Length: 181
Length: 97
Image (cartoon, rainbow over all chains, first blue to last red; front, side):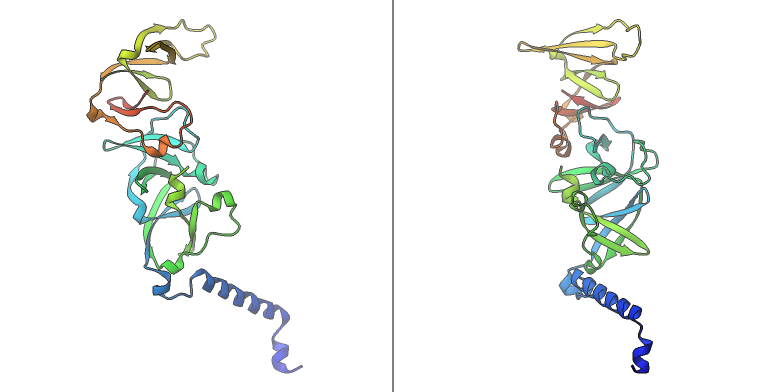
């Protein structure tokens, strides 16, 4: 065995293999693509639900409002929080926690210090209640990776992808799936 | 149109005054578990029904300017009785049935 071979332990070899495989996976997911291949940059609005971070494409965001008490709707499914009057426009507000099955940092139905992100898609408007709104990010399309494979299929259908940036792991939501039952 | 607005404890409901036959006050139950204090008798074209409510807010004239369609996102999700519109009143949003 040569000195060079002795320096290269089996553990390091395994790590090298793993890193190589990870690099391939990232390239497959789009990180390695050029801007032309990946598409134009995307603007997303990042917000929080408890300790988790989510985002929606800004193209589907009409406005962000401070939440006010909702008019409850008897007989509506649990994900419907109620109706809200936004400058004369009646909005249906949905509980994203119920839609996604998120329990982290669950708040009761109170609207205090919370926000409603008003989304528009396919001719329909609806608000989603969130705990906090962080910022709008402009990201290269290549930074949007596929949704985590570990997500349950029932939950995964609500995600377009994931974005990892500034030490945060952000779930990019699909407006279509969020607004349709 | 004139609307009778009632509060069922969670939401405001509005009914076309022409459908309201009469409003009856219910005797307070001994155990006080029941919060509904009024019974609204509704009837149109031989179809009668009763609505229990906590409070009768009053009669409100609603013009087209104060009436909004039910948001499609809500309509698509409803399985029970769907309001035909939403009224915007001083007391808040009122579901019109």
